[in-house]
Image 1 (cartoon, rainbow, N blue to C red):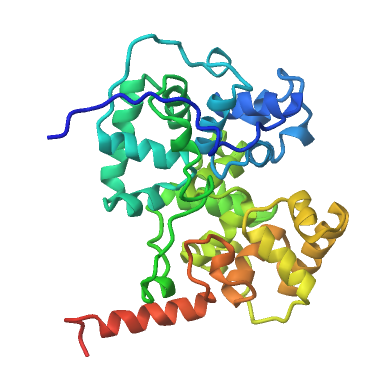
Image 2: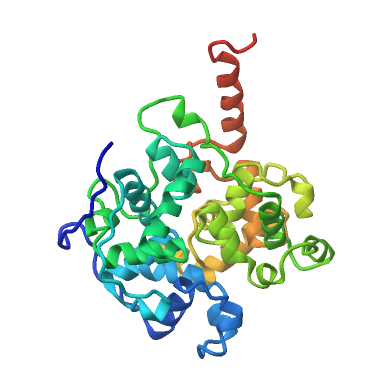
Length: 360
């Protein structure tokens, strides 16, 4: 059995990007997100407006160049825009010892990989991974995984090369390699409970009767600010990306979202690019930057794409764009195959029939 190790190291100047420049509002939002606070309830005490806390999680991730709140915690610990005390972490001088597998699990999590992607990268089940991360939290005395990542960086359990590996940029997902079969199949869907699915449905539904009905049985705390929770469940940056992942993994059928089965549509090149960037987790400002247009124009293109797809909201447009094949699955995540959902499902079906031992 390999002995547990502690890891120390200096900041590798050749792997770290430039220091992020956060404004005061972004720092306050970061402090709330890492502390696990409910943004809607904490707005007034923190001197934030409702507009500022709406989409606060996406604002924090964009400001730190992170894909998940776990990765944002690592970046925040590295660059120190907030202190341990500000997010509720007690300082400790005791050395921490993590086994190699536990440390590897925490390092991949700090790089922005989802639970599913981390499990695949390590060749273990998600249940085993949950155990590793629980052990990391326990040994670091952390109340959440964000706190565990933050504490691990500040106490030199994770180093700069863990957060910013040379092999791939921060937040990039593991690829399928050169295996042709892997390039044509979707990764397994995340493991979600019935309540998780109910919350995803509630977050995606527009205001109205169906949304009120979907709220029945859900805790009030979750229905007050469902977007962040849904994004965490699916490893998404925005609700549009979460909706696209919901479609890709077939987590919810159309009728539960109050829309008719989407039919194939033809989007103009600019609308198609805008909605493709949106399902990739970019905000309107980021889409505008990528397309070299104004933010208002980017929002307009997304609204036009939403209308053409025949759905009432942009998140549902992300869902419909995946179902209709208007965007390729690889637009959602680089680890997904560069196929439409229909082609990916057909490829998966053919693979199942040709697998050795499968019934003919």
